[in-house]
Length: 188
Image (cartoon, rainbow, N blue to C red; front, side, top):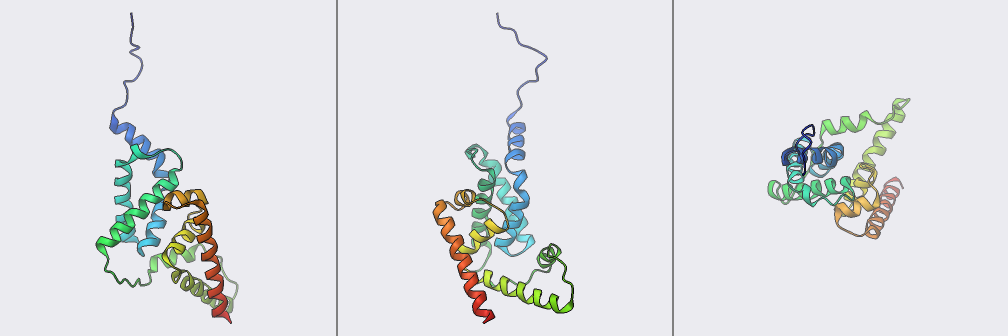
């Protein structure tokens, strides 16, 4: 005769299991998701919308998560959601303005400079780099951002973008070469 141990807790319902899985798979990468969405959309308000929609999509798609790389899976969802969101909410021609909050966030992590002259040089260098990165083709910018700002591995970037690892490596190499070429041209 089979007996049931009444001291054991009954199995969790689907909502509790889904919440635990969401917290294990998605929550650790929300900062990366916001940073990436912010970069893609150009401002914090739109990034909030994209990440919120991405979280809903991730919750609905948790059963499709294969367990390989949670970070790549989350970033891929954010990427696809952002592209869909921008297609629906942005005109074909888009000119992004300066975002003071984002500039302050970036400058808060920059090292302090010793003199006003050095500060002006650093500011000019930063502006040159920002312009050079902004002028890169979108696939190069995206790959460079995932690698340098989200610290994603080549394999994670490949999973997030749906391209082979070799393509990721060549895009990074090409992006870096284009940056070097552009900056050298500007400085000469």
